[in-house]
Length: 233
Length: 315
Image (cartoon, one colour):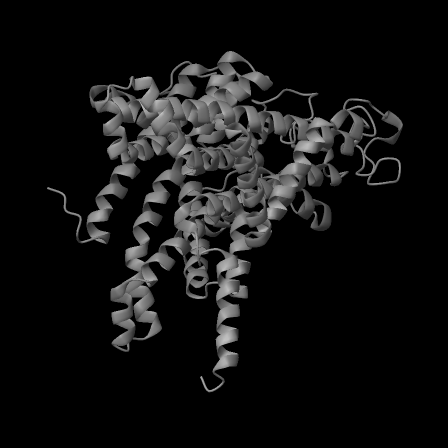
């Protein structure tokens, strides 16, 4: 096994985890934002209760169980199993996305629950503020009040939450890659930890921590764009 | 006499909390019931389980649910129901002890960091930053591979890593309380620091501590299951819910899908229940959530609007 952390294996593997993580983040936001906003706009209706139940479901169902079920039951019912070898994105983009989308949905769902709840809480808080009442009083349409006036102000904690969720997504990627057989950093880490290959382990932990710190910095900088009251000098 | 009155007061406070929980938080009550069932199953596992957790019945391996084996058997013929019941005990022990350790560390680190402040706070907070920037599962895997697998190792690691992260919240709470007049008054009359911390600051963050504890339990239970699933948690043949989904069991799931179904279902129900219970507790204990925000508030509002609508039918 590799003696040096930089023997080239990290470089081949990180795009898999990167793609999985980005797709999972997209899935998280695609699920969380619309449902969270809807839930806040229709507070205490059946739609709201349904959305909140779904959010708790996302939090409570462990991703490795969901992934196991996705592997086991289609195999029994339709004799379907996920492809064993990695399909590179530059050779077959659609096949590659097909391979990644199910793991990404499962990984993204675990974050979506928390995100949905934060979006709902923040929207509820913002929707009760004076300038929203002014916007309604001006006769603006619901779409503009929600999208332009409310959502942009409700988004700041949601963006902060993305920073907190990154380590969770990386941790989840370790499990998901293990189940779906994706050759990413997570698989490298489990293999290296099992064979006690500590240089590789420390390299993987270092790389992921650096990425997380850099993304958190970018998130901090993005407040300047999202909230005009924040200035960086 | 004075003792008696304070005791009855305390009791009435608890019963009042239970009453409010049932009245205002129906989902939280369900969550509390699930939590109680988990505790009951965990404590009385030995008497509840129909078979031993590792008793093999090779002749009836890989069976679906039947009258002899209510939830079926696994690949070496162990009763899945018995293993689930003993698994509840593991989840309960890990959940409670690791959360207790975690909250204790959070409180000590958070209070000291906020109260002492200055260079100490700066150093501690940069240390917390460093721990938070490493994905906790990666950190746990590495540490456990160094110190070995086992229940107490998992509890120790989960407690410490969660505790360091959670100290942030306690710190921000204490910073808010520190500037209160009564703390300054205590300092000015010459109260020793430990007395200020324990008598004046700790009681004021008790409600958030209970909330943080109840939020830590489900995440710790999930983390233990994830670690056991990867083979870095509680080693087989101990029936950890995460471990039951991993290892050799994975090969046999295609023949007997029940093996894949039950442990995850148990895990999901327990995490759901404890989460709902924690949410309800937060709504009840956090004074900012009182009035209108809970479901009870909306029901009350609807009743009031109905009554007013009846009184003024023209509106």
